[in-house]
Length: 171
Image (cartoon, rainbow, N blue to C red; front, side, top):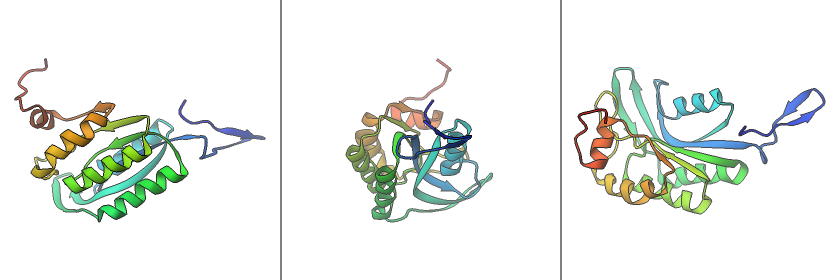
């Protein structure tokens, strides 16, 4: 198991310096169905302590994305460093990283902290069809984060953009 609880009598306490955690670096979904909110729910369902660094704030609901705000990258880096400074992070899950500056900041932080596993969900196109990654950031994604990733989980439209090929069959 990823968590290593220590028993104290009949109470089980989690020592955060020895327990494993997972960090999600992604956008916050005000509708609660994606992004940081969905990642933290998935971590909890697997009994993994979830941490978060918010790379973007979205105004969205089940019908679509109406606005996106990207916080300063210095604040994003501060969130990431704070998590790594206090927790034993075994895995990082990357989601919506809206632009090249954010991607470079995240890549630099991951090079510094060197987590064992990096899962990259290249959030580029929302289910509603809204573009969530600036076109100019595609090269940064390909050059900086894809080579670092342990696992990449694009949806079909994202896989088409990344591969430069149309996907028409299951195979």
